[in-house]
Image 1 (cartoon, rainbow, N blue to C red):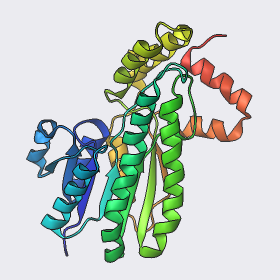
Image 2 (image 1 turned 180 degrees about the horizontal axis):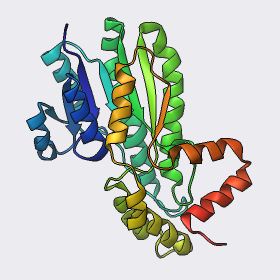
Image 3 (image 1 turned 90 degrees about the horizontal axis):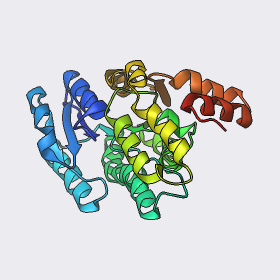
Image 4 (image 1 turned 60 degrees about the horizontal axis):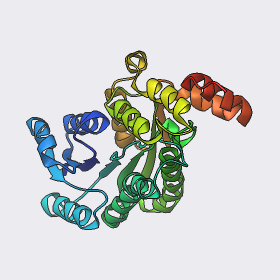
Length: 276
């Protein structure tokens, strides 16, 4: 049997690193991609092939996919994991920063989909895994631009699933809850810089404290739970359309489905520590 090939973006740490290692353990030829290739060297001990790739640079993505196809002749799994959270009040965040977050979290993923789909269609098989978030279904104050990217990727994934299905290509969404990575601390620092000295400062302090708190970090799930969900999806003959895993994902998404907006607003205020 031909060894299957997978590309995992954002593979230098956290969910991406755990996923790359998991797929390699399952026997895939894995390419781990990130902007800084020096941060990928630690993956080579697991047989993972480091790949320099900037998901905001079309040439970088095109060259990367061409290399994978040239070396292996196929691509079976794309895990669109590269992304970041830039928090701040919608009024405060410069539009250039908002656009850049969409470039990384949405358009980079979409461009990679465009690049791999011709090969998957020709194979009549493949799985595209888009990492969104429970934040692609729920919302928090001062996270508008981040949530906007995740809502957008959810919608694109649903449309893509219908488009790709006749060609034997699966499209799966992973909706992580709280995961123990460096993401929260980075997002909190950026939030303080953007909105910590504006009319939204009180809210910024509350949300930043939640994002970076040690108590919250202890509750969060390890990245491995996401890697395990991705492994289950890509090895299943008929994967679920969505996998909701990690701390808080299921109860919060259920509450969003069940409650009217004002009632859910009250829950989010309570969770984030915001007081009127």
